[in-house]
Length: 237
Image (cartoon, rainbow, N blue to C red; front, side):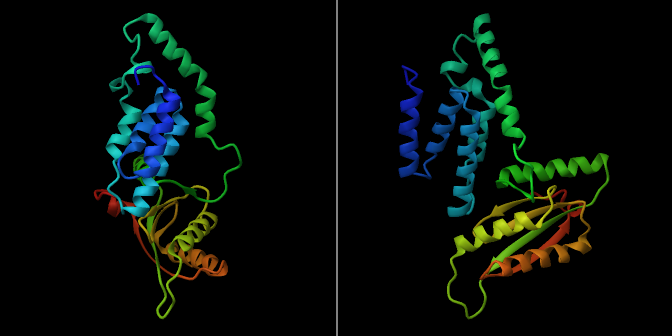
């Protein structure tokens, strides 16, 4: 650490995270990547960790600490804090930021033509839903949350839940519109945000997903519940 050997530190943290995936070594990985201005890599670790905790632990994700990695770089030492009191230090950081602009734009805007609904991790989904609710204040439109659950059929052999959830994820992405978003919540659930969709059309949306899932040899049984975002405005997602 004294020598600012980011490369070997990152190898060490990655090894530790693979051995002890629930001991928050991912935080060290993220910090090391951020010190090297590798925001895309840090964000990928963030998303992978959220998925891991959600899938294996049913939540309890160290979100606040992980988000602080992006929001509180001044708390770190090393390159970001080095020469912070010198004009050249600020110029160095600004120059590095300008050089990253194209990378940032490429990360934000998809290179290929977007198709189907947008899948995101649960924290990103919450942010998206809050943005939709705020947008509704200025431009009135309907928006519906759909809660989708995968269950096992009665008198059925135990199905491969992970493969079925992956299949259902692909089906949902293909069945919804480009402006919709969805996320996985735990081992058997998905949450969908359907923008410019009325509540009475949710049954048709569900039937489309259900038919596509069955067509692709889905082995589980699906059920759903939907509600207008107005009624969920004061509740936490």
